[in-house]
Image (cartoon, rainbow, N blue to C red; front, side, top):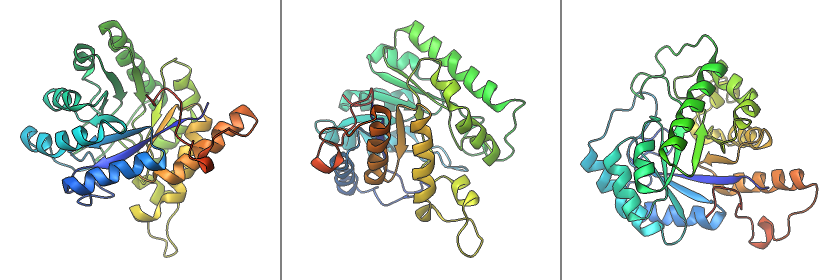
Length: 281
């Protein structure tokens, strides 16, 4: 089965990679539609940056940023809302979102009440401080145990679609990130579909620095983003969250071909490259 690709749409002025580029409503909608044309199964709309050091956004401002964009995109592509606020999640669902992408791991009661899907992500701390001094006794056991418990709580509450995300870069060092990626099959074995987001993250720039030896900036991390997304998909992840949709969809098609051991009829080259996995509805 071909893994799904979730396209990142930051309707923010301060996101680490593309902050400000899609803050304008028209630019945001155009980019969301473009990602759908490139093969994104979902477009993940967020109005509050969660980069290291980011400060919270007032709910009214977050609503102003995201709700019109969700409403415009929902007739054309499946939309998820990237938020930690119950009020924003509810308003986005009313506007057409059908998945809550929740870095706080706390909104499953909202998803259950609204009858939509939910992504449980692990984060140590909060964005303003999460990268100050992250530490674990056993990062794999602690992160995956947390996700197992959250997913079980969501299922018990009646959430019908539960995803788990190890939260690469959210309160983790480079070594933590690599251990979690190495042990992804253990997370997959829990039985819930796994979402992984490594796209353009800082540890990629540190692992593969530029020609001057300095960490590669966000816009020069495509190779690392594709490499880690492909690793995640081959390790069993059902969906990857990315900024560079077209390139990642090509990788996802190839992963699907590898799993089947044959060419995929109607693949990316013939306009049929959209994923058919659990993220595409």
